[in-house]
Amino acid sequence: MNDTDLSSSPEARRVDVKQAGGAEVGDPESAAPVRKNAGRGDAGRKDAVHGNTGQDTGRKDAGRANAGTVLLAVLVAGQFIAILDASIVNVAAPVMREDLHASGAGLQWMIAGYTIAYAMLLITGSRLGAIFGYGRAYLAGLGLFTLASLACGLATSTVELVAFRCVQGAGAALLVPQVLTLIQRRFEGRRRTAALGIYQTAIAGGAVVGQILGGVLVGADLFGTGWRPVFLVNVPLGVLLLVVGWRALGGDGPDAGERMGWRRLDVPGVLVLAPAMLALVVPLVMGHEQGWPLWGWLLLAAGVSGLGAFALVERSVAARGGSPLVPGAVLRSPGLLTSGVALLIAVGSYNGFLFTLALHLQSGLGDSPLRAGLTYVPCALGFAVSGLYWGRLPERLRAHMGYLGFALVAVSYVGMAASVHGGRDGGVALAAGLAGMGLGQGAVIGPLMGAALARVRPEQAGDASGVVVTLMQVGGVLGVATYGTAFLSVTDLGAKASAHAAVVTFAALAAVNVCAAVWAWLIVVRKRAAV
Image (cartoon, rainbow, N blue to C red; front, side, top):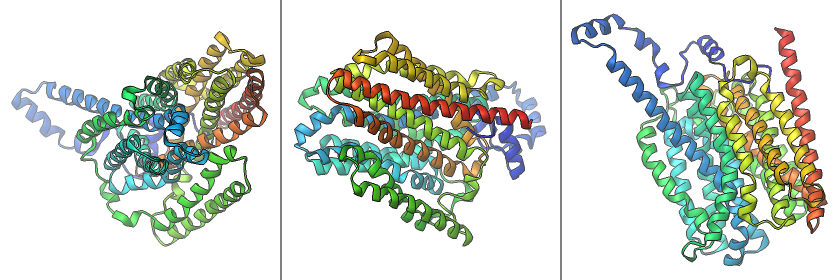
């Protein structure tokens, strides 16, 4: 949500890049335009001599399109398994606890260790991509994630599993920022819009498929392995992506202007930001399970203070001529922060809803993990439809998708609250509400990501992607903590008590989305008035 159109406008990007004195960076078809135009007379003479009728050019274009498809598949699949791993473990938690004789705190760290390391290191992972090359960083993160998944599947104690889960999160933090950055740099125009739609579908689908796949794998108890396949399933997919990804990304190094090695890492910024993010995320992830103890509030205060200190450190680094971890120019990019905050709200409400509905279905209604996971299928389908097709709408309609999407989500929450009231299972009404919520979320998140990155200069794409992905991840953690606490604070045993908690939580979700819809509508009105 910002003062610009909620879409990724190629015209706006061309104007910005021209003003910056460079060519637009994106799809290989747009690379090196000067070299393409230069020597066109020589190319024409060669064509006349050799009888080239354009078939070679056609084959090259087809090859580029195929390479772009393979690249996008590799990137989106990596994003998908990173999101999948955050949710698939929830279903296996009871079996893991019994098998490893884990304490309650140990079980929490098995689940939360991944999220904590992931959120803490995202911006640092984005900068490492700028230093060593986004493709190389993606492959390194994927390799680390795959090895850690294997180690998790073979772990024999709680301590081992917690440690390897944190390593998994670190691998995801190195992998995930490069996905959005490479989409931003390798694709342009309609192809970028389509790629963003597939990207957001992977984000939503990973969370839902994780619930379903976790229930299937744990229930199957393959070869008596119990919970271990929820981690081991990542290994063959990770190896396949590494093999294919090496051909697509193995030679992707840093740009000439970015070959500055470790001097670009901004060590002071990392040393301040990582502990600040840790202090923020730990109480948000574990607070509601611990009853929000005093240490949690103290850590939150320390985290907020740490972010203030980080801002001061970044100013100091910039003043000395260094390379801040989050450059001020990136934060001042038109629409980045406003769209990023709107993404935080949208992702927060989505993750909070998934968490609270899972609690209601399994703890309140007594559904099995598999049945609870299958309940989300209409939501995933709705998200996929709007996520994949919003880019095909006319430009004049995309500006309205923000407030219309938030409004549809709010109405869907109200409908779902009515469907479960009194302890009912929701039936068709719940399924319709889930489909509507998925449609609305898909109509919001894709355009917001496009708007957040539309006016970012190509050389700042990595840092901007790191900021956007971090805001989305923090939003997800905040959503689970806030709405999960709201649910748990009013629930009790039994279907009716759980349904009452679900109604209260869904009403709060609807109210937040109504406010977001009004905000988006006011931005559109203000933009029209300015025009």
